[in-house]
Amino acid sequence: TSRKQVHWTVRFWNEQGRPSPWSAPATLETGLLDPADWTASWIQGDRWGGPRTPCPAPHLRREFEVRPGLASARLYVSALGLHDTSINGRAASPGVFLPGWTDYRKRVCYHALDVTALLAPGPNCIGAVLGDG
Image (cartoon, rainbow, N blue to C red; front, side, top):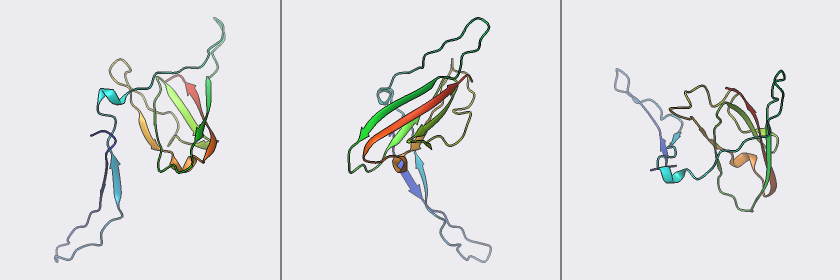
């Protein structure tokens, strides 16, 4: 099912039949598998420029409130091009030049990011800088 978290640990046995210690727990989270999971719409920044002037990278920003008692938060983020996303001035994206090249006529890649630690009760702000991919 969508958004399901699976946790596991691993151990092995050597040639003498002795077991290794258990590994640290690992986690996998399934993506958005059902078309009904997709309720967001594409957003874009204003673009300006002239026939001989390049358009600057759009900067998006949105303030929002977080109620006390937040247990966890996920950010599902993508771009038809590149994005550098932050929450409260701290990087939310795991790198730059994301989500990576793809043929947008066939698929759009996205990242599911655990952003719980970036949020605080009260006012928060998310921002993104967009670029051509």
